[in-house]
Structure formats: C-alpha cells, structure tokens
Length: 469
Image (cartoon, rainbow, N blue to C red):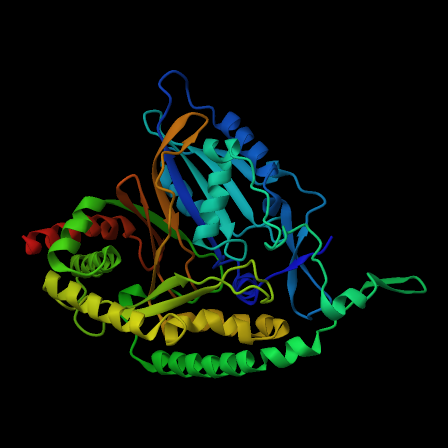
C-alpha cells in the first residue's frame, strides 16, 4: 500500500506542534438530554469508538519517511485501538473541562485525534469535544470527521470514488509515464527498498512556467510578510507569555442570532462576515475598556484564514491548502458604524488583491520549503507568529441540517482554533441552525477573563443594531 505524504502545509503544522502550544483544532457540540433516559457517558463513548473505527483516516498516524528527507506520511497504525482516543469525562464545569483538554498535547505516535463525552451538571445538556491535529484536518475536513461520528454520518454509506478521483489514503497510486517502467521494488541482498519514481521529462519542461510563477509569488509573499512584521503590533493586552510549555487555557462561548447579523448587513452594507469582524472589533474595544486599557492606537492585526482548493498533482494534494487575509481591527474607533465601514474597506482591499498575495498568504510559503527545512524552521516560525498577527479569527463552514447523536439533538456547535505561541486569543465562528456560535480559546495567564470578552460580543452586536436603527 502506498503511504500518502503530508502536504507541505500539513508538515509545517506537524512540526510547529509543541507541548505548550499544541497545533490541534477542535469543536464542542452541545446535545439535549433525552428526557426518557439518563445520560450514559460510557455508552456514548462506546458508540463514538465504534463509528471512529469505520473512518479510514482516523486509523492512520504520522510517520517519518526516508524518501523526501525530513518529510512525513500518513500510514496505517498497526496497533490502532479507538478506545485509546475516546473518553468519558464527568465535570461540573463542562467549559473548564474543555479548556483543560484543549491545553493537553496529543500522543504523536498514535493517530492525532481525540474525542470526549463530557457530562456536566445533572440539569445541563451533555457535550462532545472532538480534537483533531491541524495536520489531519482544516475546518472543512474537521466537519467531515465530526459528521461521520453522528447518527446521520453513520447511516450514510461512503460514496464510491469516481474513476478519475484521487485515491483513498490506503490505495496504491497508479503509475503513468516513466513511472510505469520502474519495478515495484529495487531488490538487493537482504535489502528491500521502495522504488524512486522517475519524473517524465516532458512534464518537467511543461511545469517550468508554473514553477517560475510560484517562485515569483513566494518572493512577493515573503516581502509582504517582512513589511507586515515591521508594523507596530496590536494592544499589549493581546500578547501572551513566551514560555515554551505548560500553557493553561481558558474557553468561552457566545451565540449570535443570524437574523440580527443580516439586519445589519442589509441596512449598512457589506457581508455577514464583515459584520462579524466588526462585532469582534467592538467586543475587543469593550473588553479593553472594562480592563482599564486604552483602546486607542494601532488596532490588533487579525489573521483571517481562507480555504483554497489544492491543485491535483501537487505533493500531498489531499491535505490542507490555506491562505489568508490580514486585517487591522478598528478597535480604537468609538463609532460602531465607522468600525463596520473600516472593516468593509479593509476586506474589500484584501479581496481585490486576492488570497494568494500579501502577508496573510504566509501559509502558501510552505509549498516552497523543502521537507527537511520545515523541521529546522519550525521553532523560528513558532516564535515569529506574534510579529505578523495578534489574533486569529476564522469562520468554519458547517452543515446547516439537524444533527443528532444516539437520538439526542445537537443544539449548538462551537469551533475551537489553535493558539499560536506568543498570542493570547483565537476566535472561531460557525453557523448552525440560525445561530453563529463563537468559540474563544485564550491564554489563561494573559486573558483569564475570556468570559468577559464573550459577553462583550453580545454588547457589540446590540450597539451595531442600535446604530443601524
């Protein structure tokens, strides 16, 4: 069976991982209790275990490879046992349990995912936390994994791949051109090594213009990143400690009415995402004022990830391909409508330039870095994130259909984005059943009052609604 190499960006995520700043994302689903029966956390964990067993990618771990020195590939875990990944937790403060679990790194020798059934107070709904390493999934792929664990996903058979589609992770890759003439193995006395694929010269020549364009784009992105890193950083309140390990987390949530966001959009213009960004800016202003901090001065730089479709034929073609926009949040602006106008203008400039240019496209540089260089560059990149952006704000797409687990209705879904070293806040949003659910993951030392910031999101939206009339 052919192992699938990690894409350059996934390899970067894997190497950026550290005990104090694990590169996993997650989501917390909230479920109504069935009034006819008590919550059986162990039974639900067993159900999730059985369903995870049926997902091929969840049975794979990351291993080093000899070809492509410094690289890594997905390979079947011969000792896979889903019971090592799924757990039942009882905790009166369920959100505190989420924060604690998100701060724990995962075992890198096993498939990089975990799931927890969290049973809180007797009168509360139960929750399910799913953690996935960023090398395993971006936001959209995480939704696919999560859906496979729910009732609807378990009832839906996996679609058969189209004849010309990319092979499944465990399938052998068909060989074409010069590769077809290479034996399956190079055999020597007591030595069995996989054959090295030989490139087709015609394909190499045909790819030269694309390679030149890629090099030029990488140079442009690198220059933009350097210029952005020289810009003044955002508020000191959003800076976190630089300690290498043991980082404690806080987790808080907010839920906004989609109809309210659309009301602002229709009255004042822009997109729903523009309105959400303006709400985040307004909430940060309120939070800083409540702490006694002055919101005037350069606003925080928000990195806004943008999913990109990976071209077929690119190494690690099934992995993440993410670009992004960089936006100064107008926290110093007291007028909520002016904040929205500033956000719209900034996002319009980003969209006009496109997601493949500018400092926000820094993730695309991973394609230009050899695998071995990823390992050496990872510590430097981890320490440099704070120089480029102050807060991550991401929007995770979600299936807007009723979802259940063991017949219990899912009522809320809060995504969780990873927290980079030197930063104190990551904001993730997802829309489900006419609500925008926002998950705030924060550094406990720098931002212990994450609940105050979450409450400020509601106040910032109310302020916008009042200003729009």
